[in-house]
Length: 302
Image (spheres, rainbow, N blue to C red):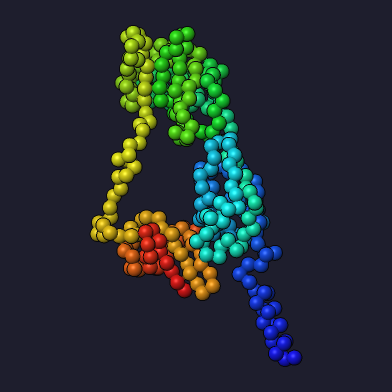
């Protein structure tokens, strides 16, 4: 009888303190609206989720959000694959069969175009900026953007055959959202009248095959070249074979006896595989010393 009681007590203890009881799991939302370019796991949590779970989830990227106004579906298998390798983190979550992610959006209005057009004209020394009104601008199509205050730039101004002025408009979502056109109900000559200074960021040129009077104005932003993207500075003294470089983003794996958790961090040193390295956890700001175990991966066992 005594041994039976011991066995019963052992079973009770075993099931009373699991890693995460089913009833204690946090169920992820099945529908969300995001304002961000990249969705993180914290956005999938309900409002009453524990703060610690939310902090850790913020470091887990789910992937790029759909285009503004669009909706994407995420399956349970997708989420489980993302959480795989995060130790026991997934044990704290109940994942729906499907998750619908919609990117918040609003339509660009003529009023949104007024300010960047005026700024461009002033920058290039023209005085037509102050007289332009929103009711003089019409858009070629309905354009959706994912920001409350979209960052628009006028990259080209040219006369149209009907005596109006055409505006080419760039957004930060390019190439996901290609540049679009708007029409200004003013003659090109009136828009570009009375230059007060030499244009600083523009190139006046004649459209190919057009008469000399058909002039257009093209300005930045310049397209980023592959060389610009790949150009990185190497910290003096860093080994060319370093698996982790100072200032680079790394995955910090915290491994204990019965759990493993991964968080995003920034390396404070350069080190090769097997060497110690200091990193700063992004979520908490704590500085931790671990061991480089692979490319952009640092392990701390405790």
